[in-house]
Amino acid sequence: MTTSHRPAHTLTDATAPPDPVRWPDGYRAAAALTFDLDAEAVMLSTDPASASRLMVMSHQAYGPLTGVPRLLRLLRRHELRATFFAPGFTAERYPSIIKAIVDEGHEIAHHSYLHESVAGWDRVTEAAMIDRGLEALDRVAGIRPAGYRAPMWEMNRHTPELLIERGFAYDSSLMDCDLPYVLAGSADGAAGDIVEVPVHWALDDWEQYAYLPDLTGSGLIESPAKVLEMWSWELEAMHAEGVCFVLTNHPFLSGRPGRLRALDRLIELMKSLDGLWITTMADIAAHTRTLGLKPRYFPVPEIT
Image 1 (cartoon, rainbow, N blue to C red):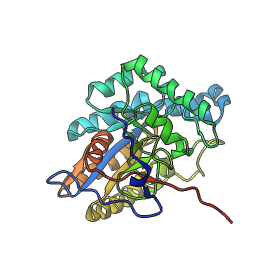
Image 2: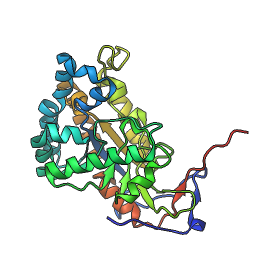
Image 3: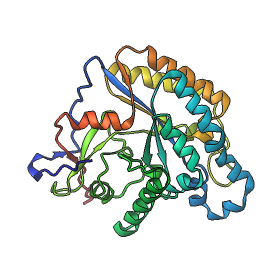
């Protein structure tokens, strides 16, 4: 992986819209199927005492044990490659699942160690967490991931620089636009830059399906038919605008049969759209890097 360093005068103020993206020849828009392998990690991070709640742990284990194999069969049938964001803890607990994903030709990316929310963390503590996740992925599967996704998409202002220092090619945690762009690691440009592939909450299955008593969700679990309708509207509109559709699913949620059927139908729609490039996040980031886009930096809002 390469890290770009540019002088400050080439930075673009991120309060201005990003530059347009030219997709590879023959394509007018892009889409990526991504899966966050949270498993038990997300609930252990939320409440360590949940380790003793067998219902909670079994609910989360459904992802690697049942959801992932089902998703791999779906992707194989559609002849598509996806990106799986894995916490280091999940990789250590389910090494055979990580290896199965790799063997199928999919991308493994970094998703923390224990799905920790880093909001307000200092630089040293956050760096140690990122490194622990990297060490776990390397030890389990010999992987040095190109990409990173912050748990709950929560990043500090120093997070991009930490990722750049470790050679990450891209991040997928921010929400300011529908196109990938180049994000500067510091205000002066000296820290280098990293590709950002944006996401947003409406294209995440957590808000639709997640519920565990006392831990997450309101108790309302949406119908897969409603979710399919919402995601289809987003997909068709984003395809028409020529932007980048990034779907975030969790195997413990969307790996269940009725929800998988909705995902199957969404994929059929994706494949029917003319000129839609369905690929991995790493491929989207690598293409973005070839476009010579000026890095953007988010100035700190000042309240006077």
